[in-house]
Image (tube, rainbow, N blue to C red):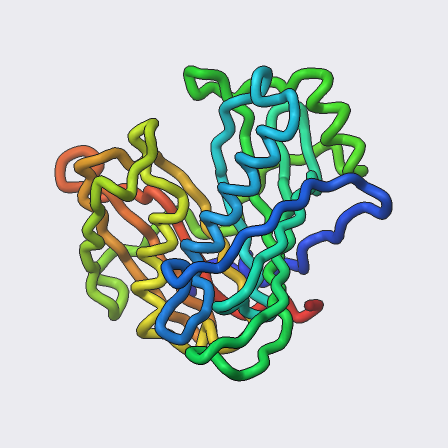
Length: 277
């Protein structure tokens, strides 16, 4: 029986509503953002998404009324990879929302440059993303958006009844039922943010380690879906459980539960882009 769902193959991400406002920022691609082939890594994409979200919030008055947000899921569609050297242009807008959460779309584009280390011309980069953000209180409880924030965000989209629906399999198969053995992924103190939570980008560093053994998945246009289920705090021992079925890789990032039990902290599925893209 298949261990994974087909959620990664859901349709292409919705485009921006005609005439809708958006926030735009630019970021230089640095050598610390790329792999040995000069491709911008998934964890670097996650950092761009965090940076543009922070910059977007600071450019509004809502840093006072809605200062705390957590990400429940991120979808990354690598349509044409971004590589070094380049400047990334990030455009951010609301694609759907409800009273407590939003789907924030970010489009990353790049016009590539050349240098002595990467002298060949490359097509312009294009990465489409969508993140399910939850507005929370300082206690971490989902909270209603202020009327002003809801009005601004709702003007960008006609979808005002956003509901959560998981795309990834939350339950991991038993270790003895799959061919790949579990492996430990060592976390470092630099992977954690000021709130003592594992930084979103650090989860995808673990996935980059996995994709080294599956280069065919990133050599084509591909989609990555990561869903965050439990916070990971300093001192946690992280175990990765992996299943490769056809052109799809599923990874469960697992942490100690009660006794000898391992529980899923996050799930990641990597596979080809939807056929309508």
